Image 1 (cartoon, rainbow, N blue to C red):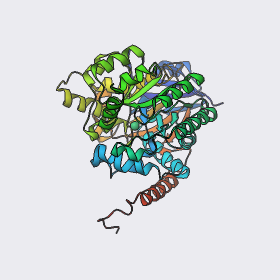
Image 2: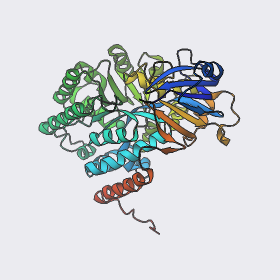
Image 3: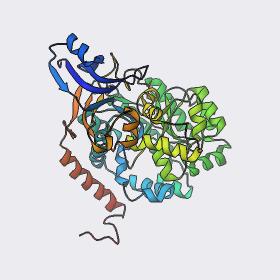
Image 4: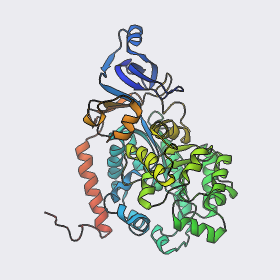
Length: 455
Ligand SMILES: [Zn+2]
């Protein structure tokens, strides 16, 4: 049990119902819960002798950012797959995933989580291989997560590049059982910071039988499902050819879609698909930056005007939520030609209350209000790129690199202090992750890089 802490003198972006921004604001929290948010003077009068005081003059306090779709260890593909877009995804990334060992998965997850955390992310929704290692990393770093095992029954993800969708049903069921083990071991762990959902990877990498088994598993444990939907040209053309349907209508006809299903990307979702999502309550994880890299983008004006709930995510390779917010604004404006459709406030909502909503974590996450979890980020606003500051949110959203994040409290614990993680050895993680990555690259035949001086 920890004592009462008063954070005072800050500009506080509350994200409450009225979206109040408090100048000279204060926040009181105890254990994992926010008790009160208000102006410094009255809070100090009401709580004259707190256990701890944190002077946040010159700083902005925001709710912890939430990423609705990630694969944190996918940063193993950082820097050499982005320019290859969808081709590199199928021909480089998917084959190389096979070379990641559980130990690699742990160190790569640690480094990926630290990248996300460093820039203000307190929660991720992560589907990948060896996701128990990701859960372990999340627990040790002190973040929050929903994690899923990557469930699929194609013989090899690498074969999809050549449209070989041969199935291995036993492999699919084995992966689903691994997902069930994950739920049994980790769901609700770390004071509830870790939740586990079911991770049917995508409509094309899963047979209808495996999708239905995943649906049944999720229902049995009362958890959600995290799936990629209409993410690539290959997927939508395979589904069309095989079932004569769009990916969304295929899933809907199976009875797969409902509230608690998070669909990543929806890059090729049609107007009818959007209507189905709206009707079923299935939600969207929007990942504008990775879509921009792929040269594709969802029907964003229709989605934004629809009732589909939308959270924001990085997907993988890079995990900077500020880039994602800017992508959500700038790419949207570029592809629609409509400047009024998206703005800083809406992008910030997607990255906070929006993601909390699609991950079924509202109202305890995403805002700084009494009764909410004590998940917040302290930003040093006296940086050249943030000065002068008039309107807080647009200044942050359009200018943050992420390195202005100074302290982070998650679940009432200080997990980042003066830019450094408090619970894990950052330098050790960086060294171990680089070594793990080099091992994976060596097995994948891309290390050392050809034609480059190694100095
Ligand atoms: Zn993804």
